[in-house]
Amino acid sequence: MPDDIEPSFVVVGDGVPAKSAIQFLIDTGANIIAVYTTPEESRGLVALLDRAKLPWEDSSNLRDPSYNFPNTPMNCWLINAFSSLILHDKILKPFADRALNLHNGPLPNYAGINVT
Image (tube, rainbow, N blue to C red; front, side, top):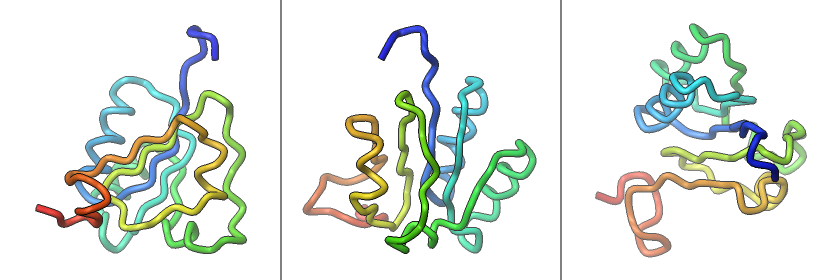
């Protein structure tokens, strides 16, 4: 990928960690293609997304193997921030080596979101 192509981002996450990651991306002017979150658990994040006019969907859609994940450009990164979802291969494959799992414990011994 040429250095002059700005990356895009898809974020899957909940709560303050996801909100902080998205706020950072907004502040840096990043291109956010989509956000997947749990609206009942992430009201502050949803409010931020609505104010920023960013597209978002309920992350439960990603549990369905038949869900049509949007096409992403070759320079797109997937950020998973504090999500309890285990993303299946159909979702991960388009990102190849451009996925980041923000996790606060060593995997696989301390999986989940409340490892501390």
